[in-house]
Amino acid sequence: MDAKKKKAQDAASILNHLLGDLVGASRSYSIFEQLADRANAKKIRLVMRRMFVSYIILTLAKISEFYDKYHDVIPEECRRPCKDLKTKIEKLGIRDFRNVFVGHIHDKSDRPISDDQIDDHYQKITNGDVIKFLEWINTPDTNTFSTTVVGIVESTRDKILQQYGVSL
Figure 1 (cartoon, one colour):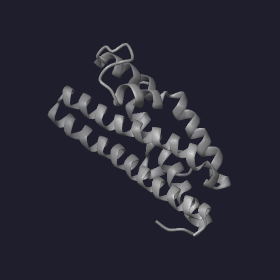
Figure 2: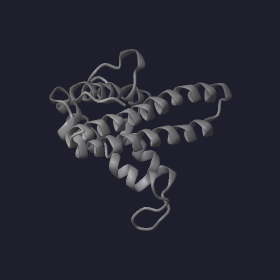
Figure 3: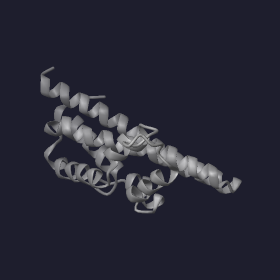
Figure 4: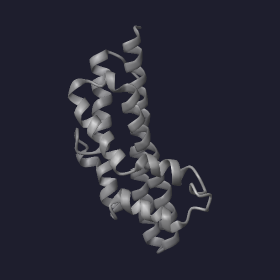
């Protein structure tokens, strides 16, 4: 197998893993949200939001890294949506959030990171609407190319598999 084809196979495999992470985390949030409603548990809801949204943020940061390393094997018809997705991820401050809040307990001034700091960044990333944010990530009934993150990742993976004749 030549180097480009091997890189394409690696790219498709990475996208497949990222796709599973996005779908799993976004759908799990919905399930646990229903459980929290039944328990009427505000604290549970806060913990769940942090857990699921943080994991989605980690995955979005990986998608940005994926573009940096594999843009040359992304099929032409997928390049613009993938680049636009990377740009949106950067504008939302996803990588910074991952580096500062998900991965550490202290901020750069060596003070503990407060709940308010974390929540302020969640609000910025989700634009104050976690449900709408999750629908941008994954809307199972309408995950078409370039409408959701899952749609972009899934279509790009499939086009790579098709264009390079590789399999998972």
